[in-house]
Image (cartoon, rainbow, N blue to C red):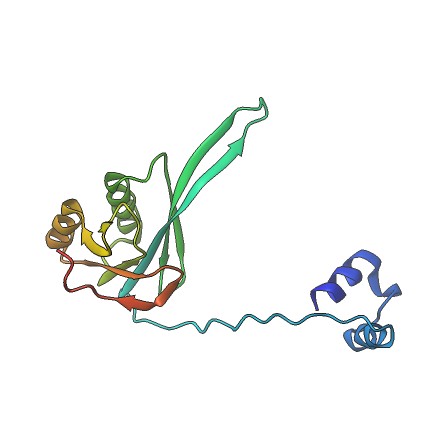
Amino acid sequence: MALFKYFQNKYGEDVFRNYSTFMHFLNANDIYVLKSEKKPKVRYETKIAEQLQVDWKEDLKFRLKNGEIIAYNLFAATFSYSRYHCFVYSKTRTTEDFLRCLIDVLYMAGGLPDHVLTDNMAAVVSIKNGTKKKHEMIRNFENDTNMKIRLCKVRHPWKSRIFQSIR
């Protein structure tokens, strides 16, 4: 469909009037379009104010007209119910930066979710010999706000794990 739309935008209806004509042309000329083998990701729904997903968009670069390159990171936060996205600029990705960016997002949202979901980012946990331990600042933040920071499998937020043993 993407290829058909490309030809339609570039040449108008002069080449292919509809999608079935385009597919007939491909089949008649032994042109095979490979179908994606990726399985669709099913969205899972949460209640309002239940979850906030956060992660870093790391090592982004921006080139100015004078040739200077500016490197930066973005703290990306997605509200699970509405899918609203917030991005906060950060020069580095330390624990202090994580908490500052998280507080900025919570301030923009005007409240706290039940929990924050993130992968095993270095700003939140230390991993030593396969054992995960939340940083003391993170644990203190959880205690102060009564909001849990849950860890999930990388690139699999629906496989959320609550690590009871993490202290």
